[in-house]
Length: 452
Ligand code: FRU
Image 1 (spheres, rainbow, N blue to C red):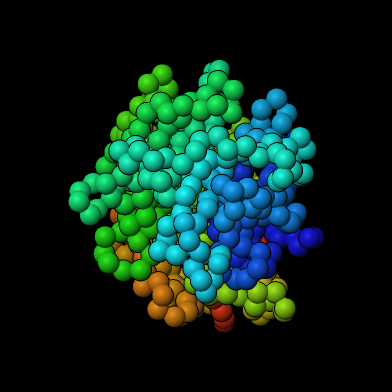
Image 2 (cartoon, protein in one colour; image 1 turned 90 degrees about the vertical axis):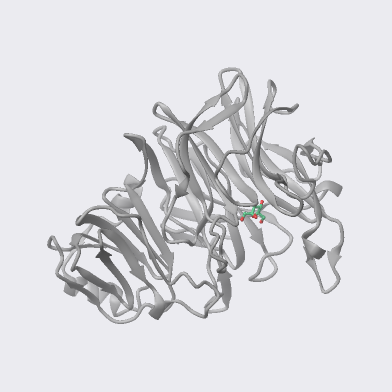
């Protein structure tokens, strides 16, 4: 499979969701992803595989993991990667449906399945022996006071000193008929045999926590997690990826958080992100952009894409998500509005470009129907004109209050608009469909700069 993508990795065809096993290993960035290869909808999960040398040019490498064992016979759910002595270790959740839906064997009936944690290794990062190389490492949890037998998943693994750590997301009963999210921390001395070291049930919200990620950033620890049911407004799409600083006591596997968690990205589409370190040792994050509708490109039907990788930094207690220098470099050629129009806009927004400018409270930006404005010091976007159906009611979204003037660095790439606000102090990125027409900017606070 030789499909190549620039800037934003997207499904090679059919369906993708979460980024998995993101790592720089033996000269390549490896980005695996949740993949259903048989149709443009969620189903029996495989790990698709893409590689890049610069985080910008991605090449799909086909399927890395697929069901072969009793414990993963209905799917290889999300997980992470670690380089141990030049061998790639992948950790994931194997699932087995209690009973498959009779009309679609790729989904479980009543959302009931068994889950166990598993691993597989690879010497080169490209070949995976799905038949002989897998090992079940943490069997299904049956103690309901610890975690949920179906909903315990998404191992993120790291090493600190001589100990390996794993964090899993799960849920436990909160009352007679409600659940709350929980983290389970495991430790190991050999990365194969694991024991439960501690749990965390802090006040983050949501009834099930998916894709937890815990890492050190400067002098702080940062937790990123995707709580299901985070928004309590009763509208569709209540699941959000959030972040918070804290301190993890490795010896006792205890986590304390400093604050309320807040969304990683205010666009509401970004979910289930994963972090790793880039070749220069910077902490970077990439997330799945949830899409409401399948795109048809010629004879390829695809749904699901990744945002561009962002640098995570904690500055004065605030978690920044900054544009990666490789992304900046990839779209750094200044052009006039006419050149932008002739090369990108008139061709139906098929070529990525960037707009940099400052905005104030009466500024208005319209990018082919997608509106951006500052109101009461909050950055708003309105995608009513460029978003299909009524599946996601969050058409107008905004950041918390910022200032009466903000710097924006906006990447526009056909189906995805990413807005970096005040050098990544906040980010708001969103899926859009059918951008058409001009880019119009009224009352900017600085001369807009266009780049391709
Ligand atoms: C998050 C998630 C994970 C799970 C995977 C299944 O989007 O639900 O928790 O491992 O997707 O595809």
